[in-house]
Image 1 (cartoon, rainbow, N blue to C red):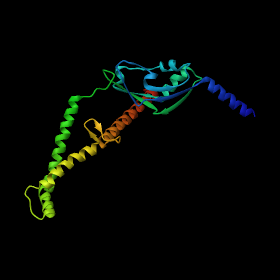
Image 2 (image 1 turned 45 degrees about the vertical axis):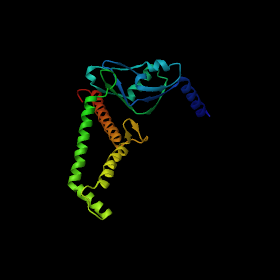
Image 3 (image 1 turned 90 degrees about the vertical axis):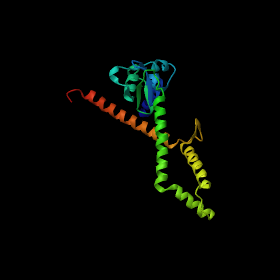
Image 4 (image 1 turned 180 degrees about the vertical axis):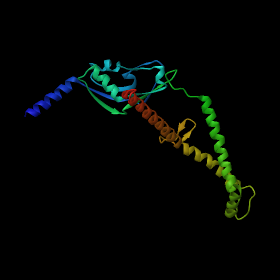
Length: 224
C-alpha cells in the first residue's frame, strides 16, 4: 500500500513537472556564425507554459574552427533542458544527433555547372558503353541473323529489328530511372536516387563517427 502511494505521488509529480517530447532533425543548413536555437534543430512538443522558452534555448554558436560540418548530440540537448528546469522529463524520439552544415547562404544551392558536367559525362559515357557492347557482340550481325530466321531471307538493313530495339533501349532507360523530365512515373525511388541516398547516409555516418571520436578526445583531455 505504501509502495503504491509512493509510486502514485511520483507519477503525479512527474505530470506536474511536465514532459518534453523531442525529435532531432537529421541535417540542418545554417549560416556561418549563426546562433543555433533548440527550435531550429528539433521538433518539440510540450506544455504551452514553457514551450516557447524551450524552443529559444541556445544550443550552439557556430565558430570558424567548427568547420562546415558539426554534430550536436542528444545528450547535449538533454543537459541543456535539465539546466533550464531540472524537474522536466525529456522523452526523445528518432535520431540521437543532428548534423549542422555551414553554408554561406544558409541553404545548399544546386551547382548547375557541376550538374551539366555530370550530365554530359553520363550521357556520352553511357552511349560509349552501349556502342562498345554492340561492337563486342557484333550486334548488327546478330540482328540480321534474327531477321533472317524470322522472315526466311537475309536483309542487309534489319530495320524491322533495329528500330524497335532502339526505341526499347530509350523506353527501358525511362522506366529504369522512373522519370520523364520532371514527372515521376510512380512514387518508387529509382536506383540512382537509392544510390545517392546510400552515399549521403554513408557520409553522415562517417562524419558522426569522426565527431564522436573528437568529442571523446576533448573529454579525455590532452594528457589521456
